[in-house]
Length: 446
Image (cartoon, rainbow, N blue to C red; front, side):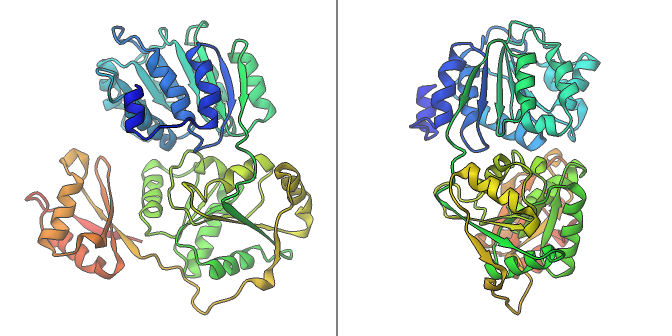
């Protein structure tokens, strides 16, 4: 394990790892406050993997996550941590994915199950999953699971695990409901709260006060002034995400909404377009954005201030990662001054407030991304690999490799990002040419 950690570049513990890992290895229950990106997956993952009995092919560890994206992310990280330990079997169970293949995977046994409450409960109710041998239960992003209405599902799942299990509860925020959950499901837990909620020194925060009725106008002035290549905008309500995305698209901006009401295939497409740089603006609720692994995020905009200063800090922490300078802009009306004051008190420092008049208008309003997403009507089930797509575009179509971006392959569809200047040529070749000797349909995603 130590050799593997070193090869992964884990040379020093993050604060949450240093505080939590000894408790996890001791077999004690833990309640930990840790934001996304703090290294908490390794904190519970190392302990989880260390305590597995590989001779026992029954489920020994269960990790519950609020979203499919976070579950996939956790599963991938656990596999990386376990790559030097042979014969560890991990199954990811999430909604939005076919049920049958999950049943088949469970029939081949699993030491670790990672998934979302709804799909885990479905497997339990149908008898395709048994939790009577679980030794460790992890509730990851527990506050968001509560926000999403998963309490009853979680309670039903936990009731099917042994009472003597070890229970680890991780939460980015610390509402009263978390303490209530801990009281109900944990045994004398050790509490850990690392000082990661202090102001982000590598993030510039700017607040703009606008007059009533000018929220949308102020947002467009902000986008036009800063012109970010990659921007995450937070709204408090799902319908607001849709309305704002539609409004911005009408104005020529490349914007997409992300919230819990989207079907999984639509959610996948929106995230693909944002992460491959073919959509500049992603508009999301706090719940939808939790667990997203978005790198190189230029800017975060709080279209509405969060109800809780803790959530504000979590939003802001999305930008400025990996040592990069980040930018966070927050919009508020005079009637919302109390929220601004609460944020100042929470961060123990005053915020920077700029007049809207300092935002410089430019003639060109649209933020046209440099990349375009093309969709191919084939995927993993057709045995497609990224190299096949790359070869078809570089060798056959003669498009330089540097003009081809991310390639995302799903079960029945593949998305490839290409430079806008070669999008037409790439689409024509994919539509008329062949990949691995076969013809597939291709289209541009708007």
